[in-house]
Image 1 (cartoon, rainbow, N blue to C red):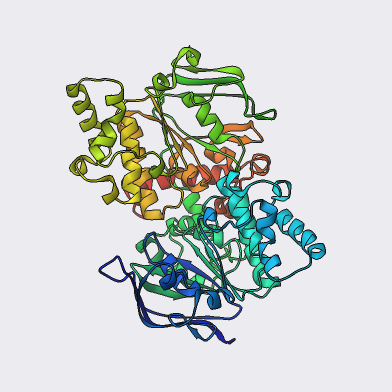
Image 2: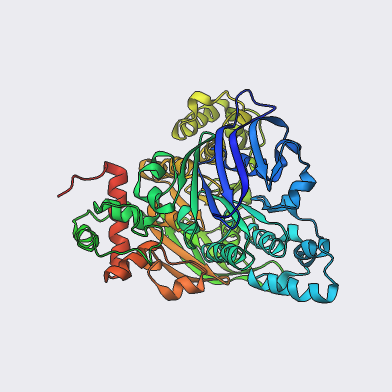
Length: 573
């Protein structure tokens, strides 16, 4: 075994602003050359642990340390952040917080400049790093003008040439489309193998990280380590679901089939996993009768007809057409920059088509103002903090009706209904600042629902949320759709979300709609997957290995999973 690079002994950390510790009794050793995944739900202490390694705690975020944390032999509480930065490099979840260059090229070159690399050698190295992450055409762009996914790519490219021993990646997949997420995992793996770095990945998207081998998984919950060991043993247990982490889809499928999973079966690699002991059960489960889910869909309420739009000269959307019916749940999917968010802005009237037209309830919306369109189409931003303007929950929810000059009686009735629909009525007099991120998301949805729109568009509703919060929000939206017939459009990179909670996917690529079909058909079409920068789910791989037609397999899984969610797991035959 190689020498330790990080050693925690009976370690605890409490932020100065808090009364109780965030980390308790941490005993953890990371050896040089290891690749370790730190897994856990939001608030489990993952990022706090990483910040104790890189020195941000306690030097940037003041707090009280108990026990010992050594990095490369240095006791962190006695070391300086400068000394630690020579050993540890960090790619933050919030890319904006670590940009130092005025252009993408400058930012990627920063580590090389610090090492005194001559300009002649530096330029090809910057080009190569940019090409690896697909940002070679953006070297002269200002980093802050890029999309979330593009910023993440630049941050990844920026650490490729660092001379530190240990690299920490804090939620590196948060803003990336499925294919780019896969590329990021491959890139981190290459840095690990080629440059022999020690790698720490902090994530809750387990299946995506397992695209490449990890040596160990450390599972955290409520500031404690609840598991530290090989991935296989964790996947065979029930610890993931117990601690609010989403299991990989293929593991869910195997557990639904009653397969007895054990360590040593290469469970963490869907390609290497020996399926022979499970084949009979998996095939039998696939043939089990499940009721086909049929959504309650009404009349057409939105029609997009040959729409073209450009911000400058180059079209962002080209001749786009599709329709949405009342009561549908539709996913807009595709890579970063494919035109999904622009399409949402057009539907909301924030932007207007250059060519083509948009019909709401059978009428062209050109004559309507944004304010009038907002009564028919509500838009919920990815980050709730960008939408909240009032201090109190009730004030936030009634704002749209106040601005429209509605009567106090009308406002009170509508606000009460919206808050009850969102489960926020008991908290109506709470300050917005006192509630969790997931509850803030509900407040923004309530502030849209108060106008009783026909359609709600949600931009990345689950971004940056762990499985527990993700499930809470998605079940709530599912209920809104089921109980109140509200039509919901999700803009998402999350293929799990599309599989579990939508009826249909409209797939965007290079500003065009390249597919518009049921989710299981879209996710089993190789051509569409490649064009739209999506990636095959592990269900597709499992079906192919079992010799089952992927489309039928994914459809059966979706219906079975929905049945389990709605009614609980049926008794085994």
